[in-house]
Image (cartoon, rainbow, N blue to C red; front, top):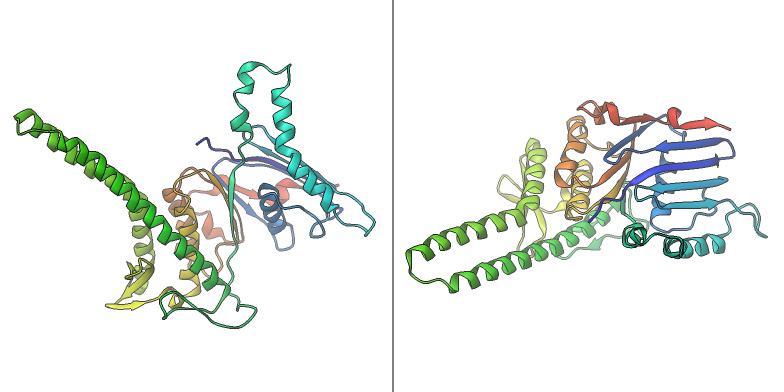
Length: 344
């Protein structure tokens, strides 16, 4: 799968005052700036455009243009309607719905070269995106929701997000199990055709080695994830474990604790790492708004490295106030909002 990333975003008339022009790196982008300067707004706009959410009411702007690495562009304009000064929702929805069709017509025209038409699937392919903004808030209904194992309760927004990620992890493990079964069957079928001849015994040894290598490859990223978690949580003597339902728990001094008993920082780290792991090395855009909240300074400094270990194919776009996020070799990826924001 080709990596499609966000190449450029242009916002004109943000809050009737600023022009934002940001050319992005295909790997890591770290946006810093004072509170109230628009970091979160920019991340929200990127998220809403890529995920086909119409922009209206929440933001004041004249035009927004987004360019992706496959040269596709999305353009949104501020509209006035009978209700007042807000975005014309119907026109935005029509624009979003027609975007891919417009590109298809452009590259399918009679004037388009045959070799360019072959690029239709690539140009029509939009990147996946995941946005993480985790804050330990009480649930609005203030009621504890009972979890699947009758021991864990969802008490906060963080617990709710983590619960969903853990359930996704259970499905992920089933996918890995099925891949291992397929590998095992494939090798076993080859082994059945062998005889007791010396040359076949050598082939048998090679097949068994091939099987071991393929299974290790299947489990490689999951094992890498567990290693990262265990290293980070070793300060409090917690180790990653699975219960009888294949759900994530933690072992501390031979006592099993459920995820809701983790600290807010541990929950947040688990959510971030699971989000990346569950993309299974597929290209996607990861947006993070102030991920340093609740994270120890050592966790902050290793966060980007750990994420890239789990998925080197993603584009990271994060907003932060923390210098610890960049001291470990990421200073060249830092963009100050003052460098991309201009008064109009």
